[in-house]
Amino acid sequence: MTDSDDVLVIGGGVIGVCSAYYLAERGCRVVLIDQDEICSGASWGNAGFVCPSHAVPLAAPGVIGQAIRWMFDPASPFYIKPRLNRELFSWLLRFAAACTEVKMEQSMPVLRALGVASMELHEQLAAIDGLAFDMRREGLLMVYGRPEAYEAGAEEARLLQDHGVRAVILGARELQQRLGDLGCTGLGAVFFPDDAHLDPGEFVKGLARMAEGMGVEIRPSTEVLGWETSGHRVTGVRTTRGTLHPGQIVLATGAWSASLARDLGITLPIQAAKGYSVTFKRPANCLDVPMLLGETKVAVTPLADALRLGGTLELAGMDLSVNQRRVDAILQAAQRFLPGLSPSEITEIWRGLRPCTPDGLPMLGRCEGYDNLVVAAGHGTLGIALGPVTGKLVSQVLLDETPMMDLRLLRVDRFA
Image (cartoon, rainbow, N blue to C red; front, side, top):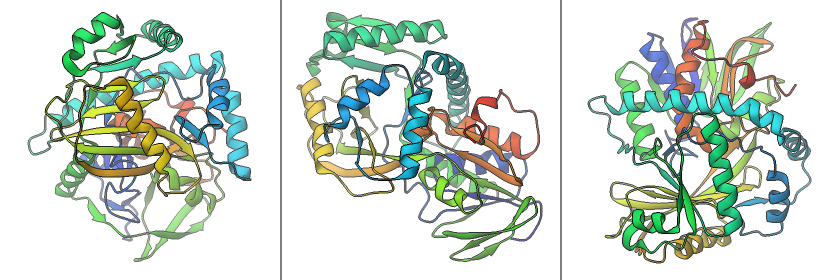
């Protein structure tokens, strides 16, 4: 790989694969590498939500107080593993600074625009012959079990309505009517009719095959070891399978992006947030609409032949060990909210690292100091939801076109 017109995409998750696809669509010669297999990380076992309703960033007013209460419970939806780490401490300070009304009001239109645009692109991809990933636009139910949580959820729904999100606030009777014999114990819910869900593994792997058919060269088991630079350019990427010399580079390695960028003198304040999922064979009485169990933040996703329960946000560094207590908490939450659901055989217990920025917005754009490096990372729990729009924007940035939306709040150097 030595041609100055070639593009190297580093990262075989949803962001990297979508970037490679849209670059190839524009006629670029693309090589995609990953240290493991395609879709082997956070893109595999997640809930698969395509959710333009998720316009409130992770950093929002009131989150700090809730997070502090959760920190003392290792089975809670949010947990920080105690450790002395300068990057974590710096991230937490920036996170606290972003949890304001002003910051939230700035971020919500951006997340909303990204979510709506990505939904349109998801639907375009779903219409391609030979690309099947079980996308269904059934909406999303946010279910609440305590009165105070239900009221907070309704208040957030009204805020989202002010930003153009369709949301229907349901009482207990309306919720029971929607779920039938599942016996949901929730006191109420908010229904987002414009959301969808899909099989994330089928989506990423299927799109990678499409990209290969368009000429993208995919090289798995190719780990980046270091960089070669000259002036304001990255001239070489040293890997376990030789040194590559691309003309342009896209860094889309999720939670690993910060450590790779650090070797170039670039600071990306991204923390790895471990999430878990448990996948079962689809039960006979499986629901059709996906759910998010409000207080516990547990996702319930019906797939073609499976049912997936997922959740938790565990800031434990690059630790991929399985904390059984957190897995059990996911199972208990589902049993408490949906006692009529009877999943049987477990087919997979999974964990993955989500890349979280302090302000809850992804990083997208060129890096100051390097003319041929584009970063696309930090999507948190919204990687699948925002993958297509991110890939489209990467292609526009790399080709020096005017992006389809304002990217100023997504600048890579905004925390410098």
